Amino acid sequence: MKVLKLNLKKVMRSRHILTNDLAKKVGVSITTVYFWKSGKRTPTLFNLEVLMNVLDCTPGELLILEEK
Image (tube, rainbow, N blue to C red):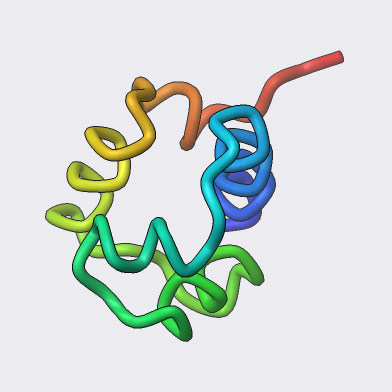
């Protein structure tokens, strides 16, 4: 899911959240977050919900491609 990897990086930057901090707050390994950020893996629905809560963002901020 290419959109997720792009938006996850963007949201993390805007919230000033580091990969290791996000991993701890979501309850996954740092490697898992790196896989999400690289697009190699996608989070489960449960982890996606936790991500949105931790990052204080909407589903659209993570899953919808913003057109320029």
